[in-house]
Image 1 (cartoon, helix red, strand yellow):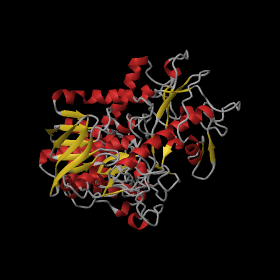
Image 2 (cartoon, helix red, strand yellow; image 1 turned 60 degrees about the vertical axis):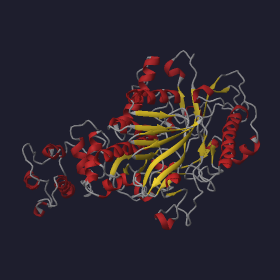
Image 3 (tube, helix red, strand yellow; image 1 turned 90 degrees about the vertical axis):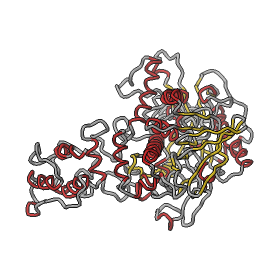
Image 4 (cartoon, one colour; image 1 turned 120 degrees about the horizontal axis):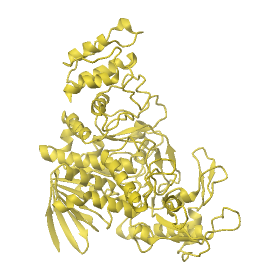
Length: 619
């Protein structure tokens, strides 16, 4: 049986990006149909089991959208209500798992509950329709426009007609159905200009994926699972180990429950989702640890290029790999005290992942098909090496920000890992917009990155920001009767960016001027127009220091940016004869006059805040 639904925006894929896109599209007035291949929304944060969020050091105060911050706070509120614990013992924000890889570790079901609660009002109003357990199988494209997409599952087919379509699947499953140009794996060095790219393209070199699982430890009990089929082969080929190799080649040995011999924290607490003693000091509440480790990363075959029959085999072997790693932990891992091998008290917890076999509902996907976009992000745009500024390469069309190492796990045909430092970066709007069709947007890991730069753009807060920007953009285009490529290519991009800023989506890195700060929007606008091009003190730090004077070394760039915000192509009036003096009130006042702004309240020397106050008529 086939039924038909009509909406403004169809979002195919209930990933974290898909959820963010649906939420923002609905809040911006669009009707939405959101499909999901499992019965849990949230992708890597829920159905894929990675509910230990991969974030950056500033995440509690800057570097995320307002909606992502609210998502994180709602998770904490769940645990505050449940256990009556408001914060960590040292006063830090609550981390239910107290894991050392993340500032927020939690049970996947809690993430699902929060997402459902966030979307509930839109479902109740009829603005949002959710279709679970469905995957895309067909699309109708007329010319340069998608007219409908058919999804199947739950015993039926549903054809969704819409004006805009967002691919928020973790593997970019919609792209081949709609004829969008896409790439996979590693591009060649000649193509991208990336030093670490191979000389020739390797389309099958896709990062490994992982079936995560959760366990608790019950000392004195035996919860050893049956030995998985092919255990010895999988164990030896991986191989299973708690000793990792650092980028400099040095071994990094971990122990299971104790600090390692070189001071590394316990493997057990790496991605712990629930810390029993945090909520019950008496010890009656057990820990829950999630296992997502190099040893159960499956990088022996590519899901994207596989036939349906091959995919069944690949997924089965990947599941057996994870179960084999659990069996190794139960029977063969060296015990911390040297007394023997294995911890049979490790008990698999199927209820945590919501599955019968105890593995995550879906594999944790690190790399997708990637659109050939209007703008592509390369490794050289974001890597820290060779840069003297505090931020990565500036992009004029930013639709968000992110920061994470360029983290690549072993890939098909390439067992090497990569973990290279990057600088805080932006998300280019053009990276979300494919060359065709005109009414398609990428809303997940499928944006216009390379194999290398994808390693920084695939993490939780960045994916959420990508989805949020895509949902807002689709609704904004819908209301104005334009296509995304028209927004990107013309003057509309600044109008759209202002729309994002009004919804507390940071577009530039300004850690001491977050959303909600009275100078947030003028500061963001100045940076978008190149205020840091002068490489002054503010270009060398992520903090803007709004109460500090504008330095003469940066004054030309800052005042030129102010004039651009005012719509003027004039140059700032700065006296070259005073090059060794602080920037004067008179020099700034001369520029404000050109911009048609008042100098009332301007200090001497003028501060960044003074300029923001002077810009108020432009806002």
